[in-house]
Image (tube, rainbow, N blue to C red):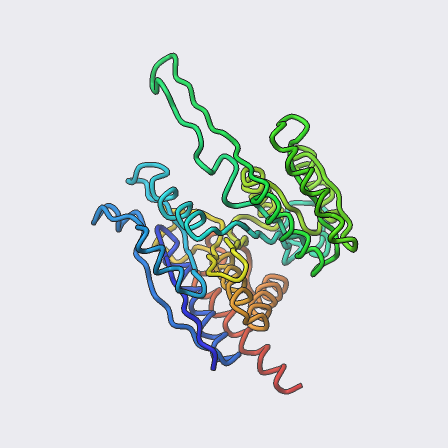
Length: 357
């Protein structure tokens, strides 16, 4: 029986609740598909910081490198200085583990969830690949004369040939696995530094003759996401634009409660999380949607090699949202653990049906 070492960071607000729901589904997947996980919890959160003053350290990162994957809940506490935890933990993990791919599926599970008239699940099904370690998130720049009339704030976009090439190549590879189309999104007409994205995109094309490709500016892409989402298969874009576009993509599919993501370094330890925040006003009420966290668990399982189990979880989500067993993906649309139990039961049922066949 295969065993995997999983780090668990529940975090703040609704994070511990949706993480518990995802782990409940993981229990069912282990029973159904015959593997085991050894789970190690990590305390990083606003509450932990306020109680102890402790942040994530380089020694913690060294330990995380020995794991197979990390499940992350949510981070953010109203009593902690804005951005402190996010920079220490979220950006710390992305940069420290070199998780250069932020993979965000945009998939409509049920037609009733989208605000777009006449769009069906087959119309909204794309992968957005966001570069995850460069751009303005590299923290180049700063403030001078803060709080005065002469204050100046500078944030520099940082793009390296190596960083751009590896994430675009990842996009081509994923396009080959899907419908064979890759779209680059940038703003190279107005931001001269982003011309590097166009040049690398063109340079790599000869390695992937079977992939259809196009490129568009981010303002046009935002429009096409809404008016013609069916034109997209795999999208690759910068860190900043990917951050924004994928929240728009989540809205097309019903809201942040449905959206999962992976912070990935192919072949190495990677981190998986729902893209929603800590939503402290819902914490402790048992009403937060765990769909995004459960979807993140499906991505985690595919990453470690349990593709059948990951597919079973995602198929269960789709079926239960489609038939109304899970009524929605917003807070209060079914209790957190109630939704998890429905998904866990469906995962077990699918395995039993496959065994009978």
